Length: 374
Ligand SMILES: NC(=O)c1ccc[n+]([C@@H]2O[C@H](COP(=O)([O-])OP(=O)(O)OC[C@H]3O[C@@H](n4cnc5c(N)ncnc54)[C@H](O)[C@@H]3O)[C@@H](O)[C@H]2O)c1
Image (tube, rainbow, N blue to C red; front, side, top):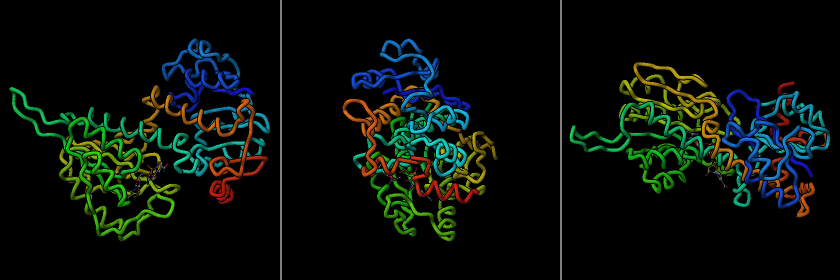
């Protein structure tokens, strides 16, 4: 059994799907790994580290299982043979052409985004591992751009007060942003429409912004439900008021498969003092700030609104290390002890993560997205 690791081709993508340590663990299980030349270079892993770990450098696309970070192009998918396996972030709810090409090519594909968020699958949960990296990176970016200390500082030249940071959306990325801002010494407030998150914010030393006029918005899947327009309006008003007291706002609020909710309006930005910073992690889903320009920075009334694209890729070394571990665990689930492919579609993780198999689109939501686009 051979596993292929291509060099990522999406613009700005620095991560790699497997690191040399993972190659070593897979080799112990009899799985050969073929790595494309230069695949790990931007994540700090030159080819020699892979060959030392037992991999060969060559064409990864003919392998039995190809592992990737970003969705491969349609041309790259054409190089994976029918019956072969692809695992990666495949954007099943947005990348229609990718899904169609995978189905047409008879490829068995697994989208890591679709791995069920159940306890047993936590070690494979790539959405969480990468959101954790992004939440950390977003806080460091905000701290760098804020032009002020995060901690209180008592110096011979005077005392400065700690930065005030508001984090919107307290899922995986938001909780890491709260923890990181807290470690840097800021006074941190967190907000989420799921009540369960309030206690988690508190446990990290943050203060939950308890907008209790919104009933708990957690649905049966554990995610947030979209708010009604009236609820959204009230939340935006409260946040615009709170924005005026903040030096930094980090936003991470998402509803799976929908545009991101607007939480900070133009008026909210205008309430902030010049020099304040907003880092919007939801930029690629439309943004949590009305003024966000995905992938760019705008300055409005002296307030910087930064919406970095693919922030996890900026911390490619650790992002790749965690992602590789997620994949190693998933590969363990779809291979036998002898290292052969062993797909058990009765397993809810295997079935849940499967995007295409035998020429069909298996994921119901992805299928309706493709049908809706026809
Ligand atoms: N059991 C597991 O293995 C596991 C693993 C990871 C995550 N989870 C859970 O899944 C859920 C989602 O996590 P995620 O980080 O992927 O979420 P996400 O990235 O989809 O969303 C980020 C956060 O935004 C919040 N949000 C949505 N709309 C909002 C609004 N209008 N205002 C404020 N906040 C808003 C959500 O509640 C969520 O906490 C959480 O409950 C998390 O604890 C469970």
